Image (cartoon, rainbow, N blue to C red; front, side, top):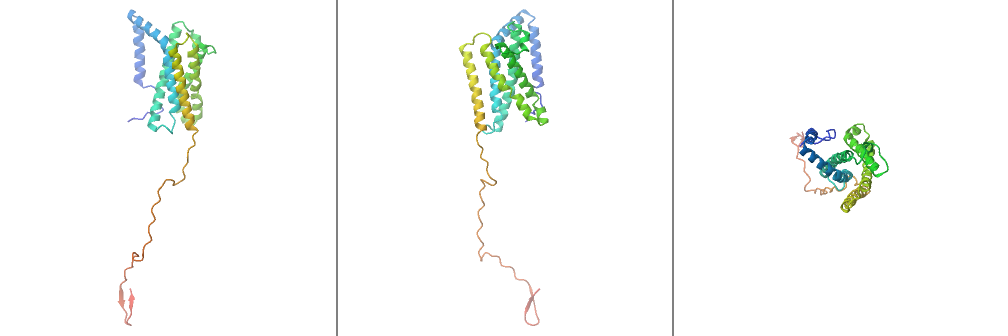
Length: 252
């Protein structure tokens, strides 16, 4: 089985080709009346739910990212699985937030300047969260370059911006636009609980004292061999002798 390298592209070539083909189909279909109606329905759907999908995928990315390098509770194949889910959720989160921005701008809800100029108002918080997500995504793609330059601490510092992008996105979702429904608020609470549980688990495992064994500890000593008895002591074989003219025998 082929192992994925960190230098491989984040998305395979077929996925990029499928995305481009889908965008072409949507563009051509929007020209026809049925396609325009379908595109309008898709735009309304994304206007309501793209932000929700962004929240869910971003929360999944944060939770799996926090737990992906945990070495006490998770085995290596579990960590590999978590890393794969983390990458996939990150890509989906960026995709949904871009769709969220596009439908808001095309629908006249937000101005194009709101995409690039952050602020402290609800819309500006969304812009700040989007820009922080771009930093996280860029560092994820360029992780191998940081590793080759022996500066992993730089990568960790930049990639940790996700811990700031996520709560800023939460604040944007709860304050921007229409008042959230009860089920939306419950979804936000569950997402915050999942991230809090993941962080607490990681901290508890990281601060847990590790027992360091001494060299040879845990090895069963070999049983002592009993002392050989006299009867078991090997007797040397007699050496050949020759006769002596004086009546004695002398060894050769």
